[in-house]
Length: 107
Length: 244
Image 1 (cartoon, one colour):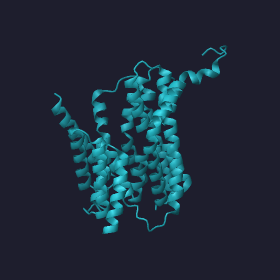
Image 2 (cartoon, rainbow over the protein chains, first blue to last red):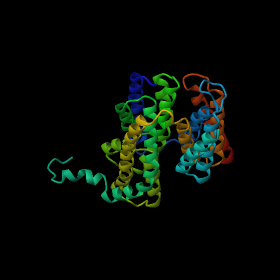
Image 3 (tube, each protein chain N blue to C red):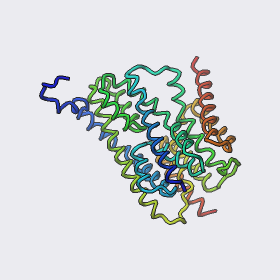
Image 4 (cartoon, rainbow over the protein chains, first blue to last red):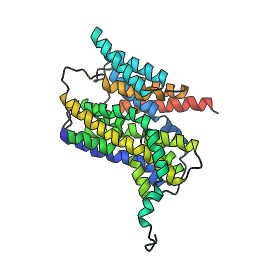
């Protein structure tokens, strides 16, 4: 359970930083082009931040030790395959949910 | 501004083209099927995490960025302090700086208040569809280009908030026996997997994932940050090697 005081700080803080990121170039730089180097770094953000966020959820126990919950790992694998091969987020969600249902029924 | 000019009330319609707006709404329709489930998922996860309805709804209205909202809740559920959750969510949203920069190039001469409003509706779908449109119709007028963006942004953002409400209401009533442990990882994987096209992105993702698992015990989301930084460096190295 998350403390109410903590969640409100996070809501306001994340709301502010997110708006600042969105407004950044649109508001302050006008139409000036982004430096090529920065553009390339930002281009790799989605492909690295999301995997770095997900991998510990699937492969660790949350406290740093390697561990796997088989139904979750099976659901994760199915979601990855479906979303990657079909290049579709919805396919991944459906495959992941279905695989989790089957895996928990079997295990 | 000329205070004597009579058609002052029409100024907003001049800034936001109606034809473009209508085209944007039409283009947004298929995307709504992708936005809706995320709103639902966030609402359910927020309720399961113990957020009350006001907090859940405020978060969806103020932040309007599902992946970062889920990420912040995830680290809070793991016991991290508030600043770590803000930092984690902020890092997840850094990609939007790129969207902001790219959109600014297509919006030269747009009024500041229009740009300030557009920042609220700037997310993966509105950016992606707008850039597709600008590429396909390079001669479209600035008001219609702006209109198209808001035509996508308004219905998608509205649905995001409505589906959060549905999810939060539903989540409160779900019996505890339903196991939702798969929802957050499966959602993130489904967002991330389509992004891993090409060798550089795949290498970057692999390095980031491996390092973050090895550093999972390090406090303050440092494993996430170091993993992502190493992944970006690896991706840059691989793509530089390929294009001399």
